[in-house]
Length: 129
Image (cartoon, rainbow, N blue to C red; front, side, top):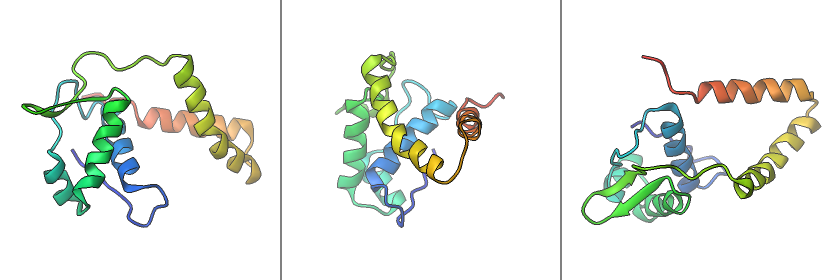
């Protein structure tokens, strides 16, 4: 699994780690039941504090993407990911508002925003082998 983080980004590193793992799951690069590196190993690989990685893993656990146990470590949820219920959809809409507002302020049309959305969605689909 290749994770890249931007130390200059305003996005917290733990958020970048969690989002990268979710992207890996979406692309099919990380399969259900697959183990992730230990907190210590990933922290060393990325050159970050182990508490940062632990926070990312805890966030992924809260969101239902991973299970954490003493014997197996951190494992991609082997059963089912949480469904996109109404609460999830509302939270996503709130997260999209500032992105769409900024796009509007910069002159993007609804069609351009929609096209960009589809491009990003397509880039996250599992790759055909």
